Amino acid sequence: MARVTTHKIKQMKAKGKKIVMLTAYDTPTAKILSDCGIDIILVGDSVGNSLLGYESTIPVTLNDIIHHCAAVSRAHPKSLIVGDMPFMTYKVSIEQALENCGRMLQEGGAEAVKIEGGGKVIEKIEAVVDAGIPVMGHIGLTPQSIYELGGYRVQGRTAETAKALVETAKKIEAAGAFSLVIELVPSDTAKLITESINIPTIGIGAGPYCDGQVLVLWDMLGLFDEFNPKFLKKYANIRSVITEAVNQYSDEVREGIFPDKEHSFELSEEESGRLYGRT
Ligand code: KIV
Image (cartoon, rainbow, N blue to C red):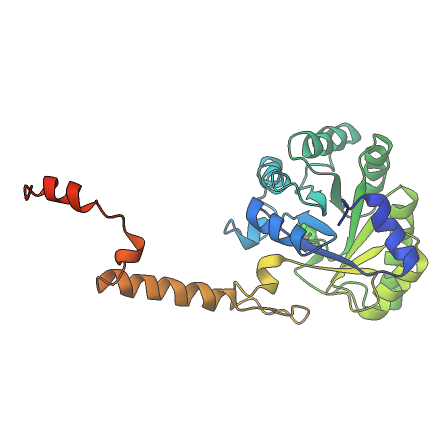
């Protein structure tokens, strides 16, 4: 597979080819996703909930994402690498957005950034694109605004709020974004947004009509048995695979079964004899 570019992602919508995106936060999983031909690797701020033990994405810092993004880029994936701009790293001013998005490319090795929200964020998207940094927008449920939105709730449930999302999507497209994540909205709302813009939409909890789909890797692999939102399909039960392996290792160590001869290093007979004074 040739390296995926933002241009290819835009063409995929025109060609009617579905875009596949997953999150990754480290080198080995980024390698696997690239080998599987995943189009886009998102180094999401979901690393906060998934791997860092936070209850939301809000505590995640720019340095955290740069650290994980750099690990992903060391896998040299063919997939496009998108770095997620964390809470309050792009909203303060255009200058702040430019500086921090620049760091994501320069220090993190990202090839594009994802920026949540509409409204005043749109002028930041425009400036960042103008500086030559590709931007993926993100509307619907924007997790960095959960306190303002009143929790992890489905957005765009009424005709008015759905139309407002369409207008925001159009403005994000006009600002120069190359694609748009739509999170947690009804399928019909996502369909209308997708049909109203020329850049590809990538849905999570947004039904089947988006131009592509994204899931958080560790959610779809089944690492957490207590996280079961309606939109999540678990393609594996990695938690039980890990639990079984750890339990077996633990039993074998306690019973003296591991390490056996096969997993140990032996002295030659001569050296053993010399060691124990037999020769
Ligand atoms: O941080 C993340 O993983 C995301 C996706 C859920 C779109 O923003």
